[in-house]
Amino acid sequence: MGFKVMGFDASGPMLTVGYIDDGIIMGEVSARQPRLAGSRLVAWVEQLSALFGRPDGVAVGIGPGSFTGVRVAVTLAKALAFGWQVPVKGVSSLAAWARVVPAGRRVVVTSERRGPAFYLGYYWVGHDGVQAFMPDMAVSGRLPEIFPVPDDVLVLGPGANDPQFMDQIGPRAEPGGGDIHGVAVALEGWPGLQWGKADDPVLLTPQYLRPAAVSRPSEVNHGAP
Image 1 (cartoon, rainbow, N blue to C red):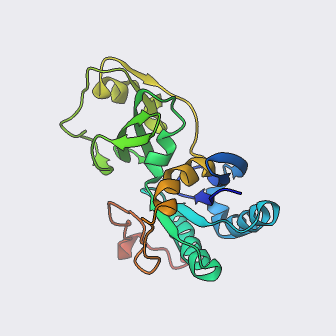
Image 2: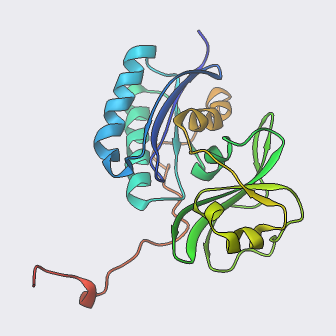
């Protein structure tokens, strides 16, 4: 048997858990039910570990994305690291999502769009993994100065459905398809886990990039009609 990794993510619209053995896909469970992360993730982790055995390491998408989903996933990863006594690796959820694009392509990944605000990552997808052209960032309306780009680039996430946004990415931007998968998270974390570059589970934290929204007193309804 090779080096086995379980990966999972709850940062966006897809709740997903995957399992690989030396890079070979063994199994995966995914659904568009991120709000059920607290109950589904644990059950799916137990299901895959029962089928394929306790993994040698755990990879988790640390965001950016849904504040609640990311917290649930990171907390579970830390608990598994301590309970199973295995290394844990936090990976960018956007970088893992980029892995759905064929090798040899540039890709922009957008996530958690709320009006003009969203998360954005820009990557090169190679045969040996994903490389970032810039750090993941929170955007509100204006894109970073690296855009527009003259190259062919695929766009994933909600930004791919916005023609105005696509024009800002560049004249050769095209919409791509596919969701993040737990297997992609496992693959993204696999090298670090196998070669001793895991994270300290005590210090593993979500990558929020922007603060959570805070309700003002006038916006809080305390049960009044």
